[in-house]
Length: 242
Image (cartoon, rainbow, N blue to C red; front, side, top):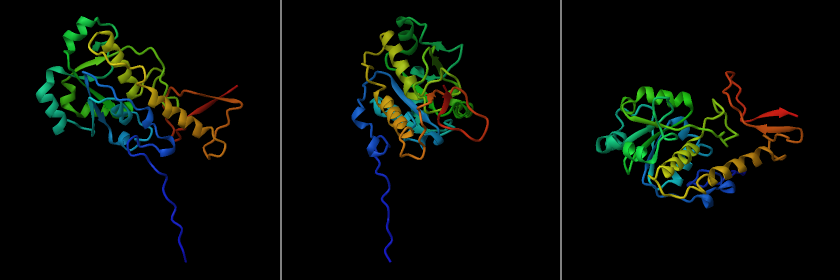
């Protein structure tokens, strides 16, 4: 008796996508003066295929990912803070933060220095809040934020608010504000291309009639979800009747 063993779907271990939807050819890493430290929640780490933290790391030469929840005693985080605490910042929303959107270039340079370290919490908003609540060393950091005036392109994923951005979109926004302030000179024109290609692949997958997750779009329009559901059922997208 012969047992047929089906080969698992081939995966690209750089971008963590199936090879059929690999986005590596669209990756073009930027060299930045700013170092981005992506603090990734373990739940986010498990979904690398459609999480944007890993993709952000691929797009930035001067970056790293550290996985955890409570970073109070994390050796790598504390190593960075010990050496460069004066130039380390946490990207986190708040009305009393240093708002990059309303500051002049001279103010940004004076506040952040020429080679800042920006820590980013990569996870859902509830996870990010928990990470910050537990991490006493992160609570001590000066915080930067920005005024977001665009809607996220991450339409296949629920967002808690209409103007919440994914990690890669947030970094893209910060880089452009730092460029405006004269701190960065990198070209961000193609920074979001891998992200946009990932969305295209996933929408094609959802709209493929041969796929079990197919959603007909003849009479329905796929639109962005803005709020988390309280029920246990959480669809990736929802449809608006014409």
